[in-house]
Image 1 (cartoon, rainbow, N blue to C red):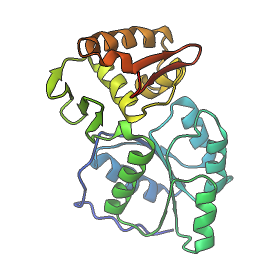
Image 2 (cartoon, one colour; image 1 turned 30 degrees about the horizontal axis):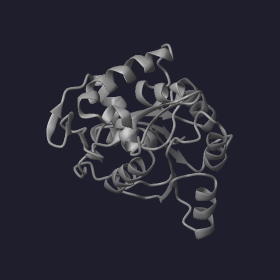
Image 3 (spheres, helix red, strand yellow; image 1 turned 30 degrees about the vertical axis):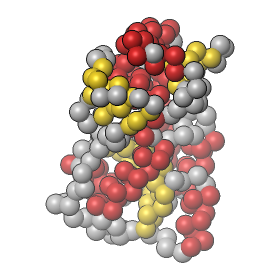
Length: 244
């Protein structure tokens, strides 16, 4: 069994909790990683092989996936390739965990679509740091980093929004919607994509619900004139742009 070095008392400051799928066939290792992720503020979900992992991803997309290379039936590399080939899961951040240390193996893992590659044994402190780094790159709306866009400042940690220092009152859904757009400016997102990113892909509600909350967000921004930055792209969806 591959060894993992764990320091239970060493946890870096954690951002907002992320749902993390742990795909590992060794029960002791899987549960140990899951336990430490939970203690670090995340929500772990466990899978013992690639097929079970695909089922879990089909049920509900996690925020990040940890994949062991050596899995029964289907290797971690093949699992990563399948996840990347699927339109629904292609953008989920993935970190590969393995005892393989050769450069060729690392390149193979990264070429398959993994965002990062960690060799065992590793410390949970390092794993948490890698998770935070990958989420900041691939899913910045998951982190608690303060975000700035034009005159807007949004702080997920304190759940406050301000326009040039003046507080802006938003409902919880409008806050999450603005956070998503501020961390993904200039790109057009369909209603379905917005639902998946803001409400979660496992929540089944009408797409027109997005329109309702967009109107509420625009109404809150209207006194400052920043509502013009949140554009409707006919036949495509919505985008936040710096050029109204």
